Length: 443
Figure 1 (cartoon, one colour):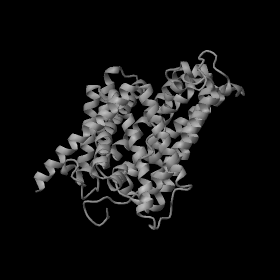
Figure 2: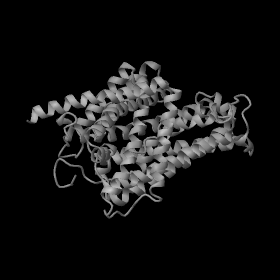
Figure 3: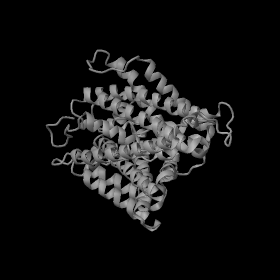
Figure 4: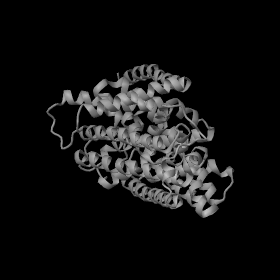
């Protein structure tokens, strides 16, 4: 897309804006809860930290690949664009069907509800205010983004700073609780013995906690000098996330010990409560509320760009593909995505949807990065300021690992994985009907 036409995006995002989007898209509410789940599947602090380091390295491998893909096709839509060019319209539609219509609004609904839980706790409101607060957050975020990416970026940058401040506070308090006894980090948890090798299965929730790094590619049509900015922003943001995640887990282990972390429902609040009591838990609730609110902002902005691109391609309602000529924002797509997320909140169906679409999301990542092999063959001589180092090792390792995780998921959770694959398969007849309807309408 070019900047000259009124039905196009404007390139207004710089390196720091992009890095903030990466940080905000990955760090939502997962790091405040997932470490407890991982601790239950490990037997000591060392394998737990090793898993978070491995997950970080694998995600960095994916980010390096996304940097080249974004530089090759700096357009809104991200993976949808790559799949459409490399594998055709059907795989691209199935990705959009799974993500833009189910996973994006489902994740927004889930995280907005998490935001509302902590927001109400911090404000002393009863549970009756949770759903109204979640709906209000989505309406506010959509409203700000209607005025273009610059307005959304200012809001996102603010909440990225706030969430990093919350993480810094958590790390400082966790390390302060250690009182020099860093042996707790590596201590074996005799209260929760785990069979040898069983902790490898805990890599799945770790990878899910690292998810969300693709949102910047969804917004690539609004990045300045994308061939250089996208790789830099992706790398800066993801390295920052890995460092934060490792430090937070060290803080959990030093503050609670492995057994305490495995037994905790809300480890971040428990760490803060150990020093500041109820006020500490309230302070942490505010920090988590800021973190989850920021994630919702990015997911809505990125998901709307995928919907808009599908609409412009004729893979969704044509009106959704319209970009407002004044604010250069996909206003109809934003409204559709926000409205559908609100429906999921009010009906309470988002948790099951997310369980059923997780495999589809990571399949999308695997096939999206696999398009890099096609681009390298088809456009071997295309000049680029950035290419994935150690090609083809890095993309191959990422794709192979993701498929391995998916196989492990199918074995451990056959019902959820089966439903995920069924949802993807249901997109095939929908695609056929939609293409037939489009031919009739345009023919």
